[in-house]
Length: 136
Image (cartoon, rainbow, N blue to C red):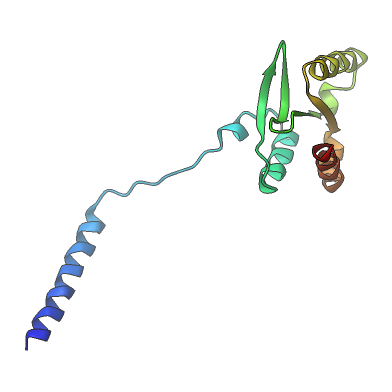
C-alpha cells in the first residue's frame, strides 16, 4: 500500500512541476554573430561563412591605420580582401588597392586578394590558397 502512495505522490509532484514550468515565461536565446554583421558585401559574407565553418577565427573590417581589412585571420596575420567588380576595377581603385596592400605588408600582414567571381565560382581554390598561406 505504501508503494502506491509513494508512486502516485511522485506522479503528482511531477505533474505540478510540469505545469509550473509551462507557466514560466519562455525566453529564447538568439545568438548573433557580431563579426558577420560587419561584413559589407555578399562576397565577404560568403567567404566569412566558409572560413568559420572550417573552424577559423575570422574578424571583419579590422582597422589598420587609415585602412580596413575586409576579413582577417589575426592568428596568422593574414588580411583577405574581397574585391567586387564595381569597387575594384578602375585604375584609381586599383592604385588605391596597391597602396593599401603595401601598407598592410609594411605592418606585418600577409595580403590575399580574391575577386567576387573567384569566391563564388572557385571557392575550393580560394580556400586552398588561404590554407597554403597559413602553412607558410
